[in-house]
Length: 252
Image 1 (cartoon, one colour):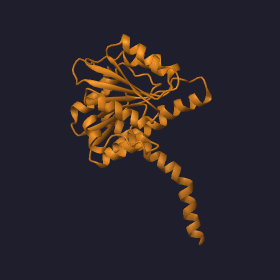
Image 2 (cartoon, rainbow, N blue to C red):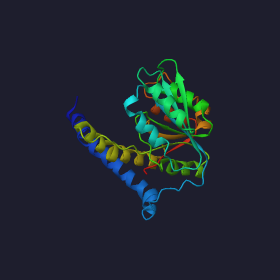
Image 3 (cartoon, rainbow, N blue to C red):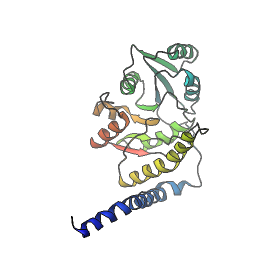
């Protein structure tokens, strides 16, 4: 191999990370200037008095220790019309018993029990098929949903009928360990930066599995989540966009 070619490859290897980082930063700044900076003086969350109803889907597999916190947050939404559907994905701990106890006391909560563990994709599909409403807010079984999260996401669907999904902005709660602190930096800086940059390019790589909102008719159009995929959140994002639907990022 000739020395000029080796030198060229060396330059690519040396400057590729820096160049890509500068690209992400530049695109993220352009997107923020267009969409976030005009709102810098009005950071008040949507009131929730006007907007379509939503169904909150919570797939649960052995979430006993976290379940009470998750349900309490999901049942404290500041929104006019909503329901919560918890899908017990064949849990072997006390998740099912806890869900039934909560459902007996909370009329907005419905519980679905799957006979055996079939994975998050099938749990979400079961919840989507049983949901009463068109907009589906999907969170993890150990996530705490912010009371204003629905308002921030639903406004995008009201403005764009061709929008299929809105990905939220997860925050890490456990910051006492080194891994937790590293994840704080990852989600707060790297993930948010890349999602802003991808939004400027017109497409997103992934709707976060921790917090996302979907239009059910769009999911039906592409066949819902695919249980054969290891990363069902990436797969559904790509299939929605390839089918012509839009996906957006909501930093609030």
